[in-house]
View 1: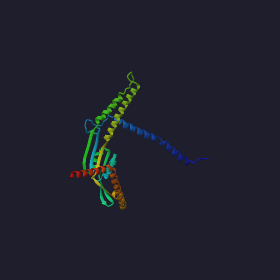
View 2: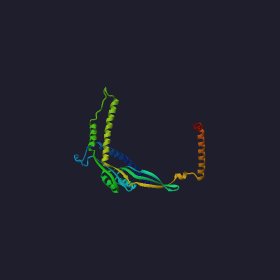
View 3: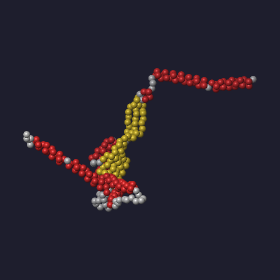
Length: 296
């Protein structure tokens, strides 16, 4: 029995597609590994484009930051707007916190069985933003345009070129003059292993410090503190004194019982001090008798 050719075409195409799709994961893994190696190698790179003697050279490692505290009309709206702006320029919202600072609480008479509770508060927000350094000025301008009052605004531009070069040159020198430490009568194998681990950790720490400098150079840190005018929250609550007060009959019964208890306590008190009462009577009788004898 012969199988028609058309029934063999589809399986052949499927097998060919599967055979060609295998290399893609390997290529992706190779590209990712290469990108990671390049990123790590940039920590110890001393190749700078341009004249490094100029403080305004583009290749210098300059870290920019901004810090603004201002009053806005609506804290929630301003915070949401800033988060949207940072996302639009491919930035990162590191932290965004909104809370109320309470100033006081007052319960005012309203009706016979209810009170008006007034609570004073100030809405605030704190944001930590990372934005591309080229967009820092525009993001700061957007915030200040929404501000009703700017309490303060601080911008910094610090040069970390020398710190970056120091770490890179130390790592390069350590790699060129890496010698095998041998044991002697004063050192053991464990001492040598600890020394080599310490040297390697120091090299890694310098590389991580340089990578952090590169991240800070590419992305500026923008710290924002927002607040608005003090507001009042009003709500009607039940008067606890009115709700917890007993009925008239219960209060009358309670008053009678309290009076009886008071009378009983007084009676017990006088019974308790009967020696003093006897002494007072005897003293009074003696005094009267002395007065009569003195008159005669």
